Image (tube, protein in one colour):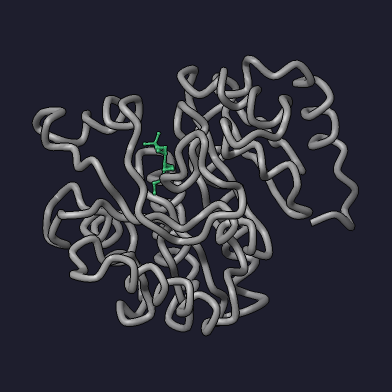
Length: 259
Ligand code: F6R
């Protein structure tokens, strides 16, 4: 696990953009796992910029998003389908047919979840999964207490997540109570992962998740068991970590042979 600490979200996004661009240069048909929420917005702006300025093509890429609210139509401004088009897909040359977001309006949700798992498998698996982290430690919408081996399924959002996400809606009563999310086990199957977190509101959970014990009560802590994880945080989100100096030292002195 590598913890990278940089002063601002923009600098974190710039490193994230480079990691993804390098992957696509190596493997033009890479499979990316994507997240929504506030955190990946600077990363998506960076990818759009790399596409525009450097001509990086996403035309052969396949994507799978982590989650979607149940009951919101895809054209609802708070749906994750809408978010992805606005923040990334409309700004790059990706083929929309190669993007996947769970269908929160599916009549048979259970089957939708099974098919989502199957589609990930058929694509050859996720090469790189982008993650944010909820203030309660969730990844995707795997709330505290989620099985660390769980697969894509329906979840009920906690009061804390509803409260956190109410800022995107006109009022808190409009936040859906249920979602479809990739499971923790599904996320852990990705070949590599990059988790971003910004701001002081994430400081406590970042230290619990990456310097505390692995526990289903902090689902992100399971990433400690994955061999290829980068945690990229700004100074504010890193402020509660006890080993800050060491993480900075490691990053500043990375040998050239290490990517
Ligand atoms: C959304 C997702 C969530 C968010 C988390 C943090 O696709 O996977 O786990 O990453 O809720 O949200 P923000 O970034 O808005 O703080």
